[in-house]
Length: 336
Image 1: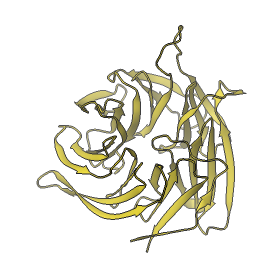
Image 2: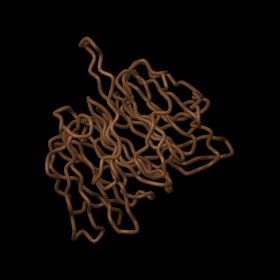
Image 3: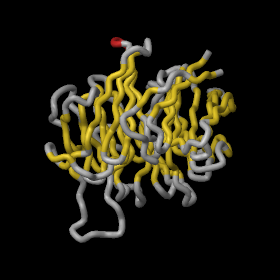
Image 4: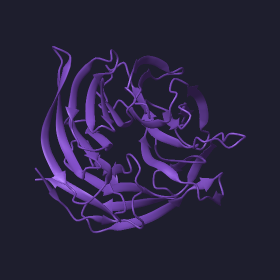
């Protein structure tokens, strides 16, 4: 179903972080951007679709707008809003937002560090673009910061702080199907496995809390009103977002899941874990019974690799890319 393509080299290897790969497809320019975190640096690669041109850029962790910092970056992800695309970096110091090509930093938000050193680390992690103008970012204290993004310029404001989680946020996702019917448009996950389902707006509304039974939910997606959650047990669970009804539970991997992704147009689901396996599943909705089914389609073993990032490169799931701990390449697979 998929075959291996030529890998893309990166300047420094991928850190062992959840969801350590972000992909942005720029169709008008026939380019795809890739971003991978290594310690306090983000490796960016711009790849032309014909495979002939690659350009590299490295973004440093910063403290404020000037000084580069040794603070570790936890995640880098592109946020696609109707009016603009931004690249968001989260670290132990704060949140950096760049123009999508990484050329200009448009916003910096410092995290509150405790007056007295505590045993708990301070960091931001979990990034999602929501609806027309919001970017939501999670923190180690369990707060979710909601930023209001103007259609251009750097007048970004912190509009709301959502305080429902008690544990560190691991991942966040917005409704990716483009469907207007879905009531829920954001899901946040934390280290205890708790999922919070939100409806966005001037004031974000909590719709539901789905307990996690004290097992980390490391990666989460929201597709057609269904939450797709990956756990440290190697399981994937499908929940109806608004009611919390469990539709399916799959023992998908033998070890900790590090990354999930959904191709919104085809309903393909990608899962990747520490067990060196990347699996492709197919999600089908049955509107009459309001249920979701999951079928296994394909798997690929990336030998001797602790996979930490896996993303589809397009909305149909025609191609996907994978990163692994200590690997200085992005491995790509294409259908056909």
